Image 1 (tube, rainbow, N blue to C red):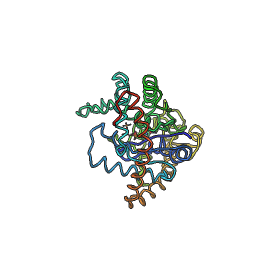
Image 2: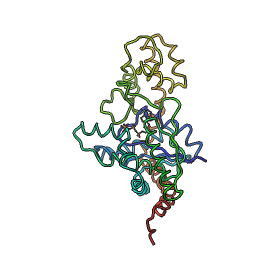
Image 3: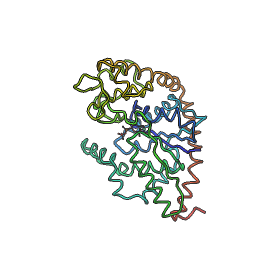
Image 4: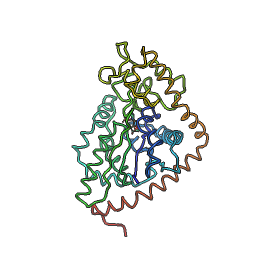
Length: 332
Ligand code: AQP
């Protein structure tokens, strides 16, 4: 049975990009077909300027939303990363396996370090080592598969390199995982800037559909989406990124094919209206279940406690093995 690991960072409210690029498949496919672990990876939220109370609040909200989206604790393990010490323990060993050069080449590091400097902030060392912690998240569980959006595939590639290198030097310890991306909506773009990814930590929320936005807000954001100067509805990601993004969203929400859907619209307005309706309907049940679950934080805490216990039980033997393999003296 495949072992599957993936996570979401509590750096902002979960978005339609998170849902379509990752969470929906965790719910519909991954939790049914393997031994799946999903984590609110809160340590990763500390790699950029953060407000402690907000990270705490967003961590619980993310866990509640994952349950509302349909993760079932009877089928998968849901937990908070910082509740399981093995992630940090293994991360250090992997830092002793990775090189400064390969981390500096990571696209996300390059982008985020520029953003931090532009905002007058210093660049945290943890921003550079972030992909190593992510590798530890995955390798600690012997995961074979990592279902992520396209933006994370470079980090999964690094994880593979580190696993292979560790195994070659210190003996076979880690499973070498692979990224699995969804067929549609692997990269949902910002509605106001369709050449950049819809990311939950972006400053301007006008182009971002949050899972907890109410129906009117979703409609307004989709209706105001930036399109292109043409009039004809055609699917062309390179030349018409705004329209292509809407067609991708509609296809992901309704199960259609974006190129075929394009032929059915005579104007951008009609496409926007149908896309808005489809997204509202897609998110309605998630929002409703979230409201019910948020009223019972004790239940969510219980799920997370049990999930952390299970996760610890899986990770500890493997991480202990890695400690021995790399040459550390076992505690007597
Ligand atoms: N726009 C997106 N399209 C498709 N997939 C996406 N994912 C995120 N955005 C999109 C996928 O969702 C999972 C969890 O994402 P994350 O929490 O690691 O990152 P984020 O939502 O992108 O959050 P940030 O803080 O805004 O991150 P940055 O600024 O780093 O991009 C992942 O599987 C991700 O691929």
